[in-house]
Length: 291
Image 1: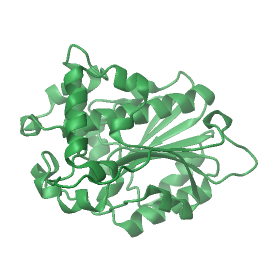
Image 2: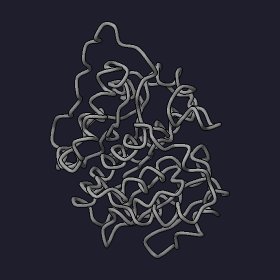
Image 3: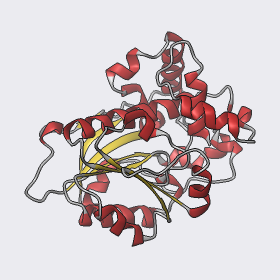
């Protein structure tokens, strides 16, 4: 609910980083206390995370317009409406009760399907394989709610079955996981994050190769250019108060290890924003977007 509301709030701004009228329509249609999330910086964080994932998805589809995008634990995401090409295939995966809710707002087409299944249930992989490659798998604010064992098992299984595929997801550091009860949005939710990952590069042992790993302060330049000055100040202040902890929250792009094919458009090198040194005298709950 938090990412959905973040996009709806952002859309109402005169100078929005992302405009998503579908998110506005859904928020207006659901009987839920969204106002409890107002006022905190994490809504902006969810918007920036969505913008980074959107940019990577557009780049994938620009190079592979007939490829397939799989959004894991999609919730009420409207990313298809924002970025889909006119030839791609798109699979929205989530639990049966979530998919039932999604059907109130989204319709299946020949190119877009909804899959009612847990990300931990590998039966849905056959549905993915029935669609044309190459593949891109997205997890927006999702994986931290699984255990480390579950995350590793899912990533390793996908990387093994789908070589030369892209994987885009966020990771949270240990301190953010440990202080989520004090987080401006997460503290108001009953669900709790479990999986902490201070160093995303460590996931390469699962059969992945890092392509990019960004902090929210290092979002793509076109995205940052659309941010109002006030929002840039909020982001900079959050980073300054929790410098190293802020840097532990990352949005990552990996590629599964290759067969004979390669995604040449991503280039030979990955980008990994360096972690800054800790400044003395700073404390407080780590800033970062809500799941």
